Length: 68
Image (tube, rainbow, N blue to C red; front, side, top):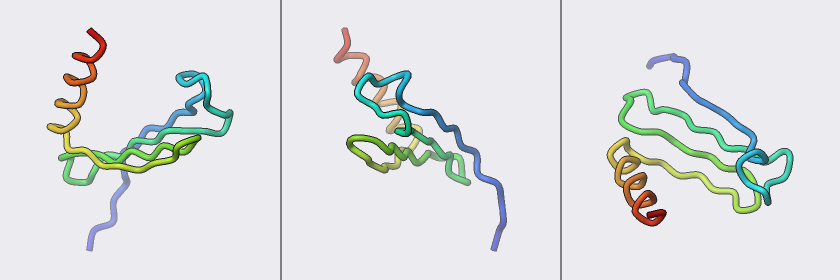
């Protein structure tokens, strides 16, 4: 059994999303094995999902393609 500190970042969504409430937030937590991360979004459409770094790279490329 290991005890460790998780690496995470947190931000309120109001400054990024005009429909967000003041208390809505996003938090990203890296996995201990560094192969991916968990995302938790609490807001109008609360959700939690996980991505490997490879999946994240693919997602970024697809979103960029949508935006071009």
